[in-house]
Image 1 (tube, rainbow, N blue to C red):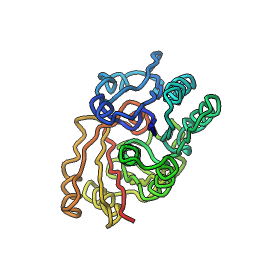
Image 2 (cartoon, rainbow, N blue to C red):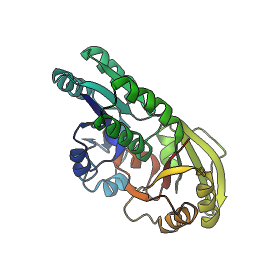
Image 3 (cartoon, helix red, strand yellow):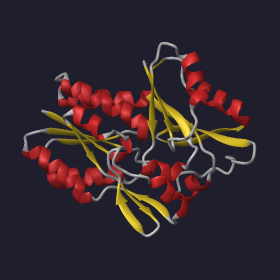
Image 4 (cartoon, one colour):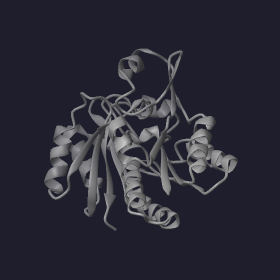
Amino acid sequence: MVAIVTDSSVGYSTAEITSRGILSVVPLNYQLGGYFYEEYASDKNGEFLPLMARLSPCKTAQPALNNFIRTFQSLTDKGCDVICIVLSSALSGTYSSACFAADQVGGNIRVVDSATIGPGMHLLVDEAVNMAKCGLSFEDIVAHLEGLKKKIGIVFTVESLDRLLYGGRLNNAKAKATLNLRPVFELKGKILFKANARGSREKLEMLCGLVPDNVRRLIVGRCGQDTDVGDFTAMLKNRFPQVYIHQRVLGPVLSIHTGVGAFGAAYVTND
């Protein structure tokens, strides 16, 4: 049997993890002030945003190596082949940790660098789970994922650049977040600055325009339950009336790097 492992930035709820059956989620780590936490399912992280707003430093860290080792060992002991899908290696050391753990455990374990994060990983992991449940072979699933991840992208914006810069995820002096300017980014393996949008309408039009014509799934993600994505979602629905648009709220790890008010869309194309 093929089992799927991923990290907590994927953003599944407890019910979603349970419903997928063959899925295991390894928690990422984060720090708010002097307090250290593990990121859990999306419904198990409590009210982290108020703490994030008033405590410093706010940092993230890759999963503890032992968490990967225990997860891999448990699955291989049951006779499972393991496919582990983790967030982009350009943005995190999680991929390296998972590879090291796989070498320590042995067995048939393949670690896939998703080249994306959060909602983008959600699209990739969903596909992996569906293929495994349909009985595709280990090698066929891995090969399909390697091709599919090239069809997945994220477009997003932030209210402030402070958290991206502090976390070392952005190195582009052209990106601006001023009274009337907001940066627009694309994520394809790493964060790519696209333009500074003037005003809310231009920002939404830029974001929507970066989504390819041939999408088959869309997820709108936002940092903070109160972040308004109504106009953005409506614009996407108008452009892609045949595509159902899922909604997700980012967990603590991604929120630490984007900040409240950030939002965007993850997509997967047909070809």
